[in-house]
Image 1 (cartoon, rainbow, N blue to C red):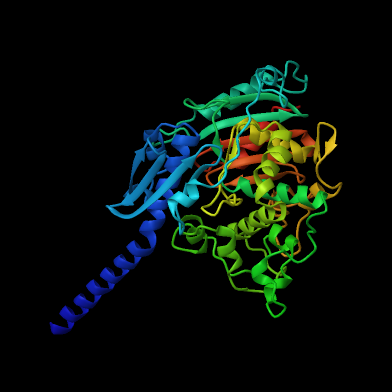
Image 2 (tube, rainbow, N blue to C red; image 1 turned 90 degrees about the horizontal axis):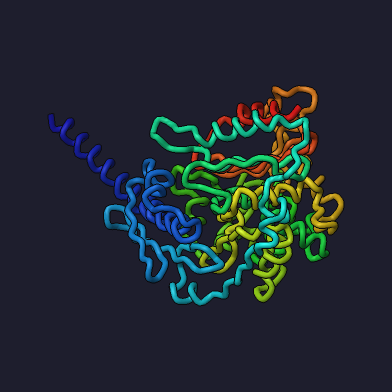
Length: 457
């Protein structure tokens, strides 16, 4: 009897210790996620807080958190049962940032870009210069079938009465030919792309390669790795782009990991990841890591310098493409979170996809080297599935066996930006297509691609 009682006490103690540890490491992540996402959705995306709470924050364990919105100083504070208080602040031109490791006043005093807007004259032009759907649709496109399909997709309601697809858009041969939005969203709605930001970060690297300021085959310019005795100095820029850096970084969002520590507890996300030790020799193993992307983002900032940083992002890329409804959000140190935090309209995401569809050509100007896009979609030796390039996912590159592709319904030449909860920009050169899908739940990509492709004869 005494033994049973002793075991019971030990089990109770173990549960208590586990509970305390879980709360200690997880509550700040939950409250940080709550504060950051509510802040961005309300102040940047102009969403209703109730819908954000029900959708983005409505699942376990996120629903353990609570939030309060301060419209006076444009901030959101998150908590879990009154503990682990975290604050995210909104700044015009920069979006929202979690206050981490630095004083809030210092973060608020950081310079911000003055964003331009699309003029009325451009708005009335056909896409991509403006926002209008093409006046002429090629006869091989079944427009009625396509629009019906898109409307059905954005009208779908799941068992929780949620609209999972918020935007669906199709560009054919450089022309916007169809777009549909769920109730509450429109062509003006800025939506979070999550890891699609990685592909944008790679594009920024590509611009600097074109300018001769970076070399993908050279050792990555990371100060923490400069010591000749440090094996990390052998990590090349290409290793970071291809997710083969070899750094010891766990990409796991279901628990406390390097990924959640970086996104919700660190002021300088690139520096945090750069401080990780090697797990294996660079270039030998493909391991998808948001940390690699944030090191790349920090390299971009350090290469162009703080004085030119924002103008480089907006004037050299976004505005050049016509992306006037796009905001990249920084960490507390002021470096854009190149792994995860970019808000843009569906049309702006499509404009980005069109850049790669057109092999880096924009209004007669080549913004990349001639081989940049080819390099970006070349499968890497370290990836046995042949499904990754330069921060873009590939379809498996097996031209002869569709079943070995990631999405059998789509051609082998398809490549795409991919973000959490079903954010996608699909680029299919052989079908002359760029497809954008935005939402807040995963979906059957292969099924949707098959239906969309069936609308093009």
